[in-house]
Image 1 (tube, rainbow, N blue to C red):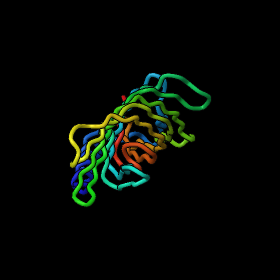
Image 2: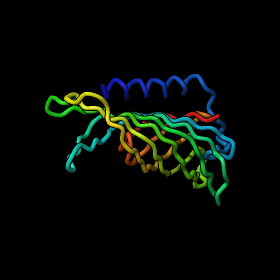
Image 3: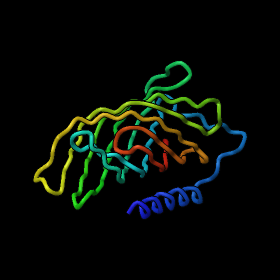
Length: 177
């Protein structure tokens, strides 16, 4: 399943790459600015805590939307929301968690055309379920993350993100408008 989702993400990146006009070499693309909306989505590896320090590794995906709201020094602070899910299986038991949370990030471009680096925090709720347990468990969800997007087109980028949350490491794409 992970391989299929990675292939789908790669196909979407290639589709956008061939259908949109590439940016001019002399036209720098800055990171997110005040008033800019950005949506990023990715697939990757997740970690699922279960009981007394017992952690399972699995598959995860996340979608986030954010808006650049405040200039802060050389960067921009954005606010938005994210939703993600992590899935794993161990000894015949299936575990899943769906998370939804507001998030805030600080974006900085390092004066590299097309580069947007960011880090931030997300805090919200998660709904956990186990195959051998009826119902769902409502839990606190907190995530810390750092990521980078490289805009090889004016509004389309390849995106990577690392952190604690729905995914530990993910690769995907970002669109800004």
